Length: 281
Image (cartoon, rainbow, N blue to C red; front, side, top):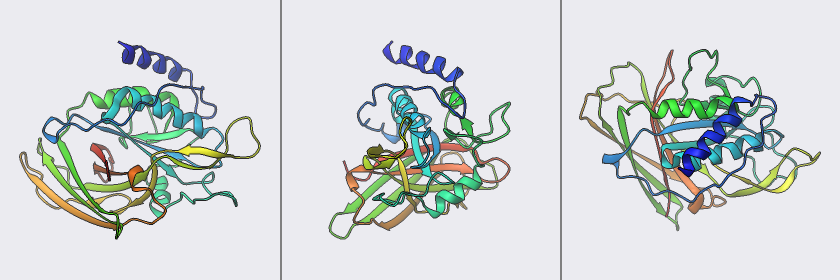
């Protein structure tokens, strides 16, 4: 009942939100949720937020996503992509969150009309002209996507050697419904949370020094649009892939997650399923 009330409250706020100046939304973040066994995996939706350390309105959008994560738990995957005019770091910033893939995704998923902005399952929703959605559309779009049964389930088995910093991600796709689309892709992202660094916020002409950045896209183990899946995607098929990566020393492995998405590429870029796991527990 509490989750239902919180969802209604967020939905009411969302109806009055605009791209340029979002409402202030607060709520509990909730702790990490243990993933279901893959055989019981439900539909998991991805929200890709476009942001930047110089974006004064973006912290409100990020807070809103935390509330949505508290509602949907493991069925919602969040990625924050630092790209565009608001993304260059300050001279005093400790980190540069920009990535080559982030810049490519900004073009691939359309430039935002305003901020906060995000893509939900890379889907062009009815009545919309862009994959980019203002904050007022996030909650409803996520809810509608969660009603769709997944055609594929994703298992991710990470292995990390703290001495060498080598990360191995073994990914297995379980095809529940035959997928006949000609171009299906698998994307592997690495995100990091709990990073404390500068961020511009409302009410201040200079960035705050200790803002907590979450779900930051740090790198990708595939191309920005995903690597083509060349195997036949018939019902019951199992497809396994393995990826290796040497994690930079500055990354804190306990805060890093592996995100996998299966998506289309072409006229439709729609995500069929997303999944994420922590590198280490």
